[in-house]
Length: 99
Image (tube, rainbow, N blue to C red; front, top):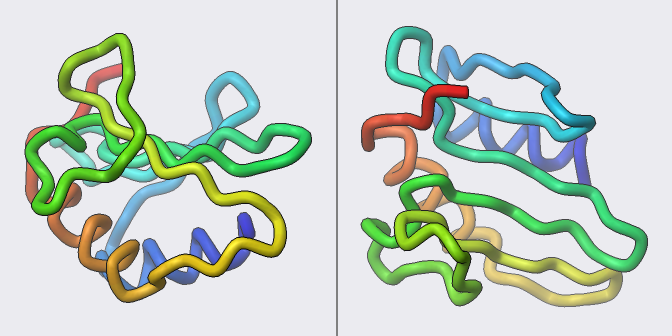
């Protein structure tokens, strides 16, 4: 998935910047902050949209942080790649998170 994540992010958002913090890949726009993160867990990948509450439709997973929303992808899950790309594009246009 991490290769797919990079391809999805770089295809959807040309010029996206990538970093790894706390063992998690982050994606952002230089000067605007981070808009997307991937947390690789044992049984699934948690896609974090740092301003996900502003996305339409909002990703399904809630967070303690009212702005953040998650999408959990388990091995073997079928997910809507077009929706993921749409969320990535929307998220890249919002103010990013400073970390």
